[in-house]
Length: 245
Image 1: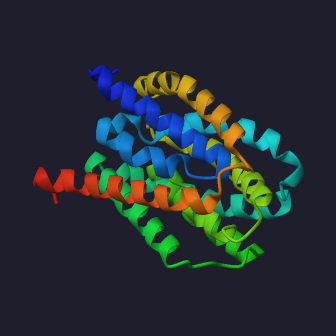
Image 2: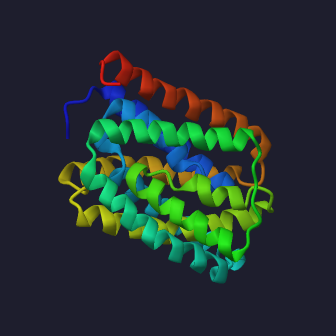
């Protein structure tokens, strides 16, 4: 593990707790909340460690919401994710850490913009395929696979959102892990960070389970969007100050 201060490690772990809590409580948000902040601490924390802890959190979520999962629609989205992951693997072999950081920041800002514009799409079969394709790209390259598929379900009931997003993210995260492993993006450092974040993930799952049904998504949404925006802007500003952009 790189030589990080105890304060940096503490901030990273608290970030994972909060992100896992949000993900468990409302069905999405782990990567959107965690990735921009973790990037500022150490680029090695993204994307592999985030995807690994996401798998752990999603296993709990899928089990607890299994009765409401619509596997026939999720299957179509997962089919779309396969070519998206292939495109992402190619991108990861062509660009370095700087390009990855900028791409992540811009993708977060774009997701926030779409949410603010309140754009929505009918959760039909074609749109599930398209959402899966773009989720494959953003999820594999940046660890942020939520926005494309979440937009399809933004007007659905809480139970349907949590169930179907969790099922999609779980299988998609496993696909992304396989892709990252194929191009050498999962390292010893990735596993070390994943182990470091596991206790925080379990705490977040427990807290999210307690808060689920009590915290309104309309209350959480502005806070999440604000945090994501500020974090993404901070990443871009850090690169500008280095004279890279």
